[in-house]
Amino acid sequence: MIDGQTQLFGIIGQPVTHSMSPAMHNAAFAELGINGVYIPMQPDNLEQGFHGLKTLGFIGVSVTVPFKVDIMAYLDHIDPVARKIGAVNTLLFDRSNPDKVLCKGYNTDWLGSNLALADEMTLKGSTILIVGAGGAARAVGFGLIEAGVKVVITNRTESKGQDLANLLGCSFVPTSNLSSLAADALINTTSVGMHPHAGGIPLQADLLDRFPVVMDIVYAPLQTRLLREAASRGCRTIDGLKMLQYQGAAQFTLWTNQPAPNATMRDALLQELQARSS
Ligand code: ATR
Image (cartoon, rainbow, N blue to C red):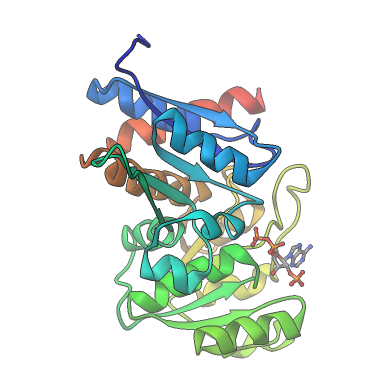
């Protein structure tokens, strides 16, 4: 029940109407008996929206597209990995001194992808191919490098892929040369295969048997064509909800100092996804 003690959490983005995070975080609060609520918010103006969150007493806020980079201008402290990635997806308001509320920014996207992969493999010392070179690839790539992975990038637009490889200090392989590559895992960070273009696949299916683990960050549909083709070739697959779930779990722990109820959060995401597709 919402009352005078209810702690405020939420997500800012544009749009946020389709965010699955409210379902995931509110289920976690309910499971642990935390008097908190997590709401979607779409500020017209980021600076004003940020000051609103600060003034209104919010504790923790997720940040999504298009605000992950611009939000950094308003923060008092930025976690070093988030700074390297150049994007913040999590805000934590420190209200220990009511006269000087501080806001710290973190990035949990990379933790989400690392934890999802770590369920299936040992990261340190492995080689992983990232398909894509956008914001998601950047967060995933920095995270893997933090974990001691040898990263290889491939991307439709070679110049963008090469730029990200230079930034990460890793190698780039043109899509046309992928047949000469083998790695311990492959991660699709592009939107290829996402509803309503669910028939898409980000690389030739007959290359997949070179990758024992295949992960997709697309979660709608849950079983993308990439994951279906990979499973049919004997690869172990990791769906896109895992990254969403684990990045949310890391946020939950930052905000509450409690271990996240992972199974509850995943169930909430699955139910939400099912409700949307029916
Ligand atoms: P995000 O921040 O979500 O990662 P983004 O910055 O727009 O989104 O990056 C999208 C990535 O998906 C890019 O690597 C893009 O490839 P290009 O650099 O060639 O644009 C990739 N991508 C999107 N649609 C694609 C498609 N149909 N085929 C191949 N790659 C695609």
